[in-house]
Length: 271
Ligand SMILES: Nc1ncnc2c1ncn2[C@@H]1O[C@H](COP(=O)(O)OP(=O)(O)OP(=O)(O)O)[C@@H](O)[C@H]1O
Image (cartoon, rainbow, N blue to C red):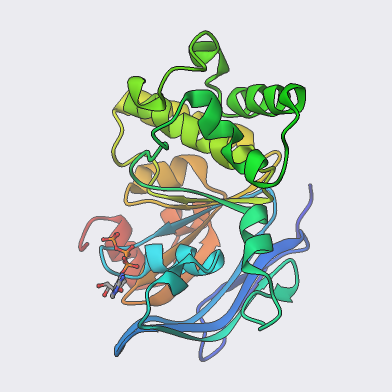
């Protein structure tokens, strides 16, 4: 795919990457407060489909808050207020008539710690489709197999589908959680530090999986691990104190950042 990249600076927003691929999310002047704590400040980000977008930055800079705004999960915190807009496929998810339920069927999420339900592997993956009214056993079997294959764990669990999901390793549990997200056929997968609780081999498997999944999905991943961002993402946004300091192609961020603060962070001078 040929893309034409041009950069523009504005006084209020950091570098934006403009391309001709389709946007899945456009965040425009997004602000978020937890009570009086201004946690996200004028965030402008344009996230393209079929890309892996990494969100990096030091602890407390707003990475998790940002991805939890994308499926409106952050609103579960009562003190939260927001301003600005988040366009998902060109519609503002903050509009009063926007259905959060519909949004969550399009946007799956994987968390830091694997969080399977205390149910069988099969029932974990079939959970979402069942909620959406699918009862036919043959169709459910197909969805479960396809999702577990998609999460690169089918061969490891196909003979124990009816055992409790807690009975497998942490890395396998995380891939079951990814299969659970895939079972609702999402458009986007949000991943909040999905490998930080995993050993290096399981981490590698998830990283390889992310590379596979981007063919069919758009992925936004929060990571503390800069090598991971460099290895698996197409674009990287560097957050600091609730702002986006720089957003660009991952190669550029790691080899030729335009902001001194990005350079200091990626070279380990702070954070
Ligand atoms: N539920 C909450 N209630 C109140 N304040 C919160 C809540 N969650 C996060 N914050 C605050 O919002 C700011 C951003 O936090 P956030 O968790 O998004 O950062 P982060 O970059 O993901 O951090 P980490 O890398 O440590 O997970 C911090 O000041 C944090 O204390």
